[in-house]
Amino acid sequence: PSNLKPQSMPLKVIHEDSDLLVVDKPAGLTVHPAPGNQDHTLANAVLAHCPNLEGIVGTLRPGIVHRLDKNTSGLLVVAKNERSHSHLAKQFKQRNVTKSYLGLVCGSIEPPEAIIEAPIGRDPRNRKRMTVITTGRVATTQYSLVSRFKRFTLLEIRTKTGRTHQIRVHMASIRHPLVGDVTYGRSHPQLNRH
Image (cartoon, rainbow, N blue to C red; front, top):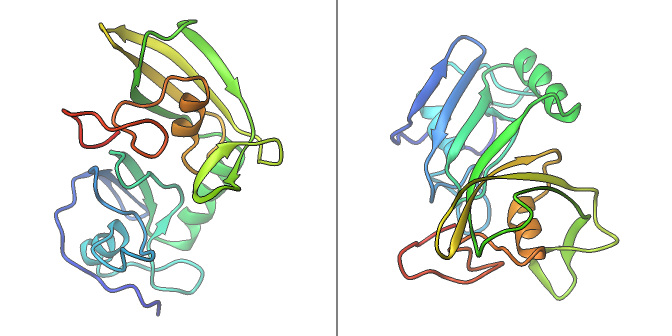
């Protein structure tokens, strides 16, 4: 058994079968326990939702094969057993899974479509941040225009790789940070998150 405890919390389930659970993670919910967030995470909620969970690698824990930042909302796929976890992990590793996001960025972005290829690694001046750095890991982000507004642009963003804070770092690196991203941009009076 792991130290992870089931905690009953509201979960918006999009799909569930004997192998998979797809949930719509709300903004503000941490995916896994970590310093500062030891409980009330998505992993705790999944254990409560699936009391007969088979577990992964001999441990009673949900097989969350990808993550979303705490302040990012969106769909997460959870494996309910070792077989589905192995299959999903392989698909993510081989980049057979398409991950698509909507992001509101500052300014009027040009060109309307582009691919950002810039390595991402830990910021040597601030260990809590990531940055574009030559010693980082390969990272590729593609964006395309959805709508333009007076001071913002709504983009569809697809990641080819899955680096920590990848979209946030790449958009900030081209001077179009996500609106409300206080780590890589600045706060916004009407948005409390990116």
